[in-house]
Image 1: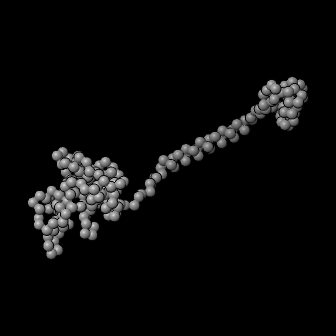
Image 2: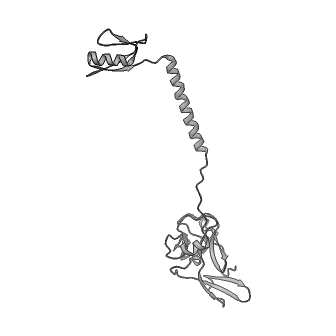
Image 3: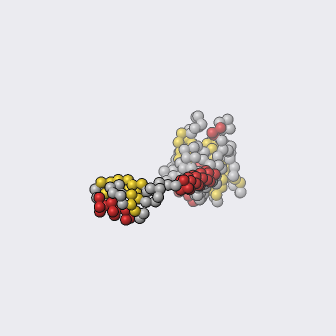
Length: 223
């Protein structure tokens, strides 16, 4: 079966390309061409000027609507759902050395000659408790204050000897290095704070994963 395109004439009629018959009804015209001539026709109606103008207006409105939608999306502030802050209970588990899904880790410090330091293993937010300052409580002032926290005075002075080497399941707070004010990337971003009878590390401002943590404390830090 052959095919042919037929254009509706200005008088509104479809004229058979094989004979002089003409039709107004499209279905009847198709049937005539198929049964009488074995011809499959594709009908095409030439659009009027008014129809063309209406189509142009429609396209313009669609473009305007799309443009306004894109502008609205560009100006909209998308807020990601924030996770809950890490608590002391979380820090005790996930902030421990060799913890599963750990939130902190120890590595070589970014400060020259500072040894090891504490680094964020995930993005940390202000207010997060990321690890615990574990060690041994003593009642005689140690001569080496590098890893020591003075716990305060109630009836007897005591000090917390922080871990010098990591121990599986214990907190890593003693590996937080002192801030270096002369280095812009080594400024305080966390602090030591008391939680009950323990000392923990609290984040003061956002710390990206892989960044080192620093605190401001002296040799005889006292809570």
